[in-house]
Length: 413
Image 1 (cartoon, rainbow, N blue to C red):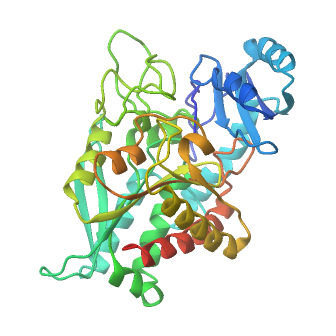
Image 2: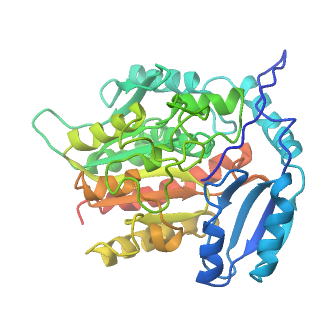
């Protein structure tokens, strides 16, 4: 969910891997007991040298933060003075990344086509979407929806069995706005796979709704995490008057843009941009939301945290129909839990996770009139949390798909 701190590019003659040999950092796990402690930790959000990987204000739930070695003494003193219990869980982030990432790149290189036991590069994903369109031309259509800052074509897959004179409700799913959250695009691809390649068991889902799936909103950043910096989060746009790069795409939407939980510091990982909608990738999603006026459900896939978050992120106030959103989320979480026992927590984003003004979810509800939007924070894995082991992709995708099926069956509720 949160930060990047600049890693080196390392090449191999066998495969390309992304890890660091020079990042001197540690990771702490905290047990926050009250709002005063939570607010104190939130002050580190976006500061140079600190990267909040996981945050929870709920006692007993963990908070994890990466800290540069040079900042560790000051950070520990702050924790002790505030009586925040903590433990050091990763002593050498660079070593951990090298070990976790190398395994996936070997798997990805040896797999043919799209599989769900490895994380795949962007080009391979587009090839899979093209193949689905060619194999199921009566159901699937790959669409060029725009271009990224580095001029990569952004593709979405539309899945529908509707005829020209039939209008159905639509579910719009996107993933990968935060580059390092690899599990999000993988789950988006799995949803395509189940709707089309397992269509006999899921035909009712296409009967109930049209589907629009944009698996990678931030292809530039996603590729950068595969070649250079595994923990990169933002877009890759060049900014004026700074050597820092990129904008947090999930703080760049023009609904309460620049509010709490975002930063005007270009070097912050929650930098909201010089203005709303500066990022071409964000404008693509905005335009899809506004143009697709049959969209009833919007899901944006992230990691990590096992959360189903509804509006708002810019305020702790709740939407007028929050009880509907909450109950729908709770029932969805129960469907997810029934598969593997994985528990998801449902709540408003600001109350369950923290402030995040300028998000796609809030824009969907507040500006695009999509009345059932959720951020889906997928499971964590590996020591970093962002490196869910490849063998856990399929279990995570299967359980979330069960939850999505429940949502679609209630798309008109």
